Length: 291
Image (cartoon, rainbow, N blue to C red):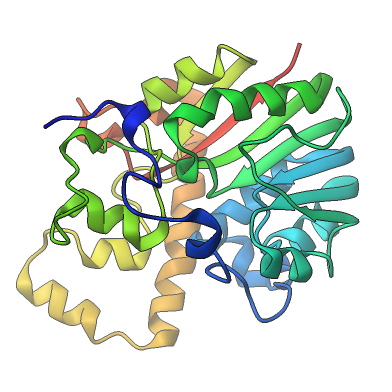
């Protein structure tokens, strides 16, 4: 039996969200300012932090699904913001986020956001929208649009790829789709074309690009790429310091590579499964404007 995307829900997989996410992404304390460390200005694992700092700005900004505010201190210390708000489903995360943000509240993103129309200059998120059920996505985007002021922006890091949920079998624990969803709760991952079409229904100037240009991926992902056995053995023997050095170089090359592509043909950064160079890397950066 094949299922439509709107039938793909947490309930379909036997998941109760508030229980599933309770403490799942809560940290013991608020995260540091990642960019205060020189090497992190180039480190490939800090690319998301740099993306947020480069794009989030305004007097009032809102972090949707803020978790424990992992990028809170980084944004406050490096971006052009004044007051940072956050909402999240998990009370444990909210308590930690309060250490960094000016206002944080427990909130179910399937409901109406508790803010006035046009209240924020920018609404942002990181690793959230792939957790939103397909049937609820448009309502959330409508709410993000509502609380964003005219001339404001939306900035998001989004799980993105080709996931055929129609083949899911929740009763089979060995089903790859079921295992994928149960790992982190990604019930709503869609490809770049679907993502762009959805966002263009609510915002203008929607820009989507792969977070990583193939094959310049983080070290862990590279280790799982097909490669000669001898090279795989070499990489598996690297210690922490060696891996960190590789990560810094990868991050620098990624940045330079991306700049070059943006100057020559930025369309190559849009995920496209037809071309190995542009295929989905699993995560995209999206920016959009509200007219």
